[in-house]
Length: 223
Length: 223
DNA sequence: TTTTTAAGTATTGTATACAATTTATAGATA
DNA sequence: TATCTATAAATTGTATACAATACTTAAAAA
Image (tube, rainbow over all chains, first blue to last red; front, side):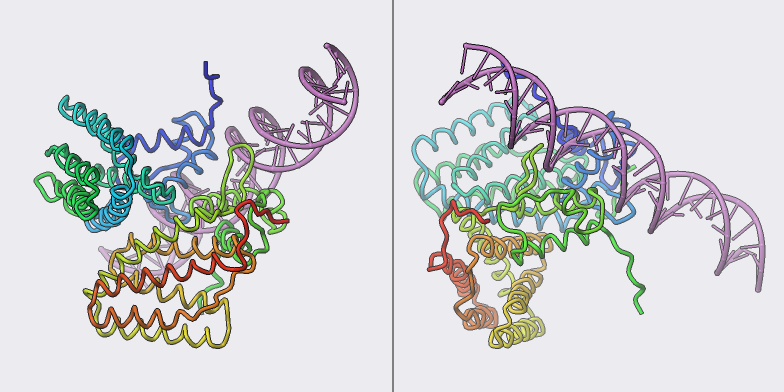
C-alpha cells in the first residue's frame, strides 16, 4: 500500500503542538520553550522553531523578540473580532454557493450535515468538532474560491481554539443541527439572503456560549 | 536620540526580500535559494529560512518540501479570488466606519486622501502606492477591529504584489481620487450601503487593468 | 536507439555550538 | 530600607556542519 511515508520533523512538531494547545495540554499564556519541547519530542530546536513560526502566523501563538513565544491568551474582544471576520467570509462563501451549487453538491452537504448530527447525538465531542468544521469547509470549497477557502479554514481553527483557551469549561450546549438545516434549505432554494442570514445567526450563536456561566475574566491566568 | 536600534537579521532579510519581489528584482517563479541569498545579504541561512517562512504564510512564496521556495506566479484566477476576499473585508470595515466614525476621524481620512491625490498628480508611483494603502488601512483601523485590520493589511500587500508579478507592464492608468472621494462622502453622510458599493467599485476597478493590453497569459514564465 | 541504472551535484532539512539578549539574583551603596 | 550595580542564569538568535532528498548527468544494458 502507501509506502511508510517519510516524515517531516517540522510538520510532526507543528501538529503535535497544535493538538496539545487544542486539548489544553499546553495552557493559554504559557511559554513555548524551544529546548524543552525539542527534548520532549526527541528533535532539535530547529524544527520546533519552524513549527512555532507557523502557529504564530495563524494567530495561535504570540511571539516577543528575544523573549519567547507564548500560547495566546485571547481576550473576549479578540474572540468577537475574529468571529466577525469569519462570519463575513463564510457569508460570502454561502452566498456564492446558494447561487451556483449543483444537486450533487447539495447532496454531499446534506450527507455531511447528517453525519454531524449523528456524532452530536452520540455526544462525541471531538468528532463533532471535526464534522462541524467539515461541513463549513465543504461550503467554502464549493464557493470555488481557493483563497477564500484557505482563509475560512484558518479562521475555523482559530475561533475554535480561542474558545477552548478562553473558557476551560466551554462546551457546546445547543444543537446546531437545526441551524445547519436552515442553511442547507436556503442553499437548496437558492435564497442568497436567507443563506447569509442563516450563516450569520449560526456563527453568532456559537459565540454566545462565551457570555454564559463558564466565562472567565479577561485577566484570567492559567496555572 | 533613539539608540542605533539593534538589528534583527531575520526582519531585515524579510524586508529586503519583500522589497526585492515588489520591485521585480526577483521575478515571479524564481527559486529563493537560501545559501545564495544568505551570502548576498551577508548572513547565514538561518534568518533567510525564517524570512522565507513568513513570506510563505503571506501567500507571496510557494514552498515545496525538499525542493525549495519559489516566488509565486499568480494566475489570473488567483488574483481575482484574492481581490474578492479583500473587497469583502474592506466592505465590512467601511460599513462599520460609516456607522461610527467621528468628525476627527473623517478629517484624518480626508487629509490622507488629499496627500494621496498630490503624489498621484506628481506621478510619484511608489509614493502613490504607499499613500493609497495608508488610506485603505486607516479606514480598516477605524473599524476598531484589529483582527480585521490585520487581514486587510495582508491582503492589500498581497493584491499589490500579485498585480506587479502578473503583469510586468502593469501601471495605474486611472485616477482613483474620485473613487476615494465617493467613499469618503458615503462615510460622511453615514450611508453604509453607498459606502459598501463605493468600496466594491473601487477595488473592482483596480483589478480591471488586468484585462487590458499589458496582460500576460497564465503560463507566462519570466526569464 | 531507448531505457535503466548509478554516480555526482545542488539544495533543503536537521543538529549543535556559539553569541546576544533578557530576566533574575545578590551584593554594594545611599 | 531602598535603590542602584554587577554578576549569573535562562532563553532566544545566529552560524555552521552534517544528513537527507531531489535533480542531473553519464554510463550500462536492453
